[in-house]
Image (cartoon, rainbow, N blue to C red; front, side, top):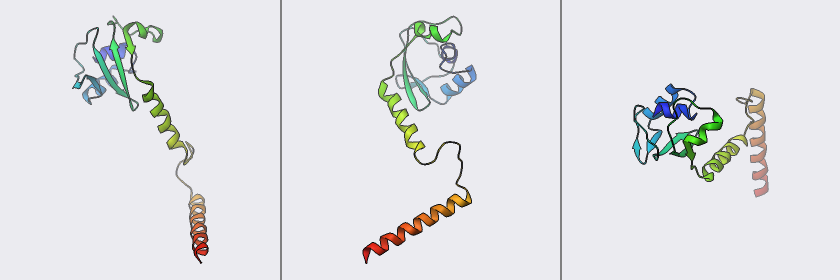
Length: 129
């Protein structure tokens, strides 16, 4: 199993593929697979990677690692488009607060935030009177 996933380029190294199998991220139906499990053409795999459940059908077994252009000969990807759309929404939901790479707020940022909250609370109290 781990060699097959490495050969069809779903994992960069065999050790990463082995760890994914051991962690239960590779399944046939509901059965978790061991890295040493033999796979055959016609098997339906579910591989969890990057928060997406890839649904794969094995068409043929490659003799060794194949180029990216030849992967479609050995595996058919049946992952629904909704899975990729959910990942895009997740990325956008994380980006709205702070831009990537800006790190934690500085002391000045924290003071500005505190001032903004203080002013906002004062304005709501004045509106009630």
